[in-house]
Amino acid sequence: MGTLLIILAVLFLALVVILPLVEKYAPRGETRNYGNLTRFIFPLMALLIVVQLIRYYFS
Image (cartoon, rainbow, N blue to C red; front, side, top):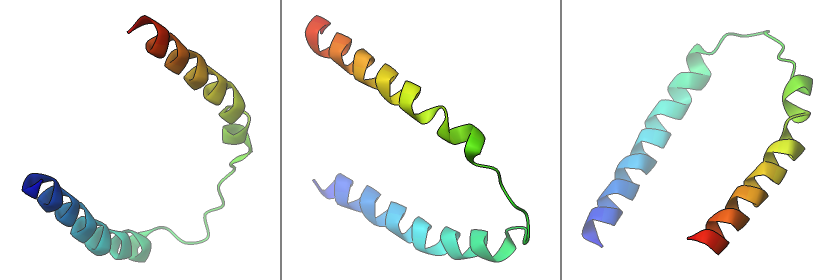
């Protein structure tokens, strides 16, 4: 249990330190097109459900 708390604390501290640095040095004004990504969400979710069902019934 102690190891888990240490890992969570380190991850939280890394998030607190790294997130402001990434936001500070990220390129400005660059528009990103997320339309191409959104068309893959539903097929990937369906694939995930199928894989989880296979894993549940055959494991």
